[in-house]
Image 1 (tube, rainbow, N blue to C red):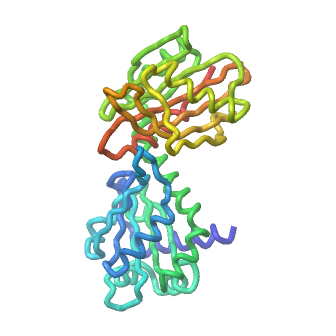
Image 2 (cartoon, rainbow, N blue to C red; image 1 turned 135 degrees about the vertical axis):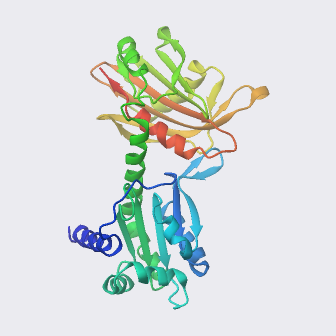
Image 3 (cartoon, rainbow, N blue to C red; image 1 turned 60 degrees about the vertical axis):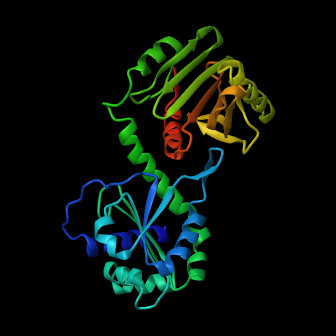
Length: 336
């Protein structure tokens, strides 16, 4: 409780010092980019620290970070301060460090001194723009900064993830963007999915309880399948189901053992299994592949096991932001 109060005080004082009565618009920039503003002398250490914090990767099959770090000089602060994610940092205490000069201009003396003797990381929201995350790193050494990495890691990642969900939800699920396909799926199959515009039905196989949805630019697919009874009660049963499912429904697609991960997860108050890994075509003449995610869960009321699957094919391009969007879509699945 004390920590939350302290962070709130820091946040309010930062707002007061920087903004005054300035009116704010929405932050600009991609939701998977972090604009890092520091001097060259601090760049390597700041990069090492941020990679320790943002260590999540999507295997596509090559590892792709969920956030891209973009470094800029302190002189560019005025132009970049309204970006979606802004980090200003100073570690080297040389008075010639332009990053240190920037922090000295942004924070009051008392705050700067407190950070040097205690927690060197400050995280605030909506400082220069709405729906913005603003982080200050003001450490007396790299060792000082690293001492707080484990303490602050989950807190920082949670705030960045919540920021992503809020911003993306406004884009994906506003009233004007929801696809009317949702209502027809509910009427025909007894379940619904909030699909933004651009998604359409690729194939329906009612006799096999399978619906294949698709979207282009990039190529994305969602498969929904359901079967009678509970096959989600053990990891072994779920694993067997997962390996057979793509061949039975997509026909020419299979899952790879490479970086395959299966763990328990929650899905709409049901105990669920979440699998993440790589998909590939079984046809060697037309080799394709990319990342996938599946949720398998049992609906006791309906006595049905559901399998929600997402695939993306976007070779040579960033996929993680589309992957995270699809995860948000899958989590809107409801049964009636």
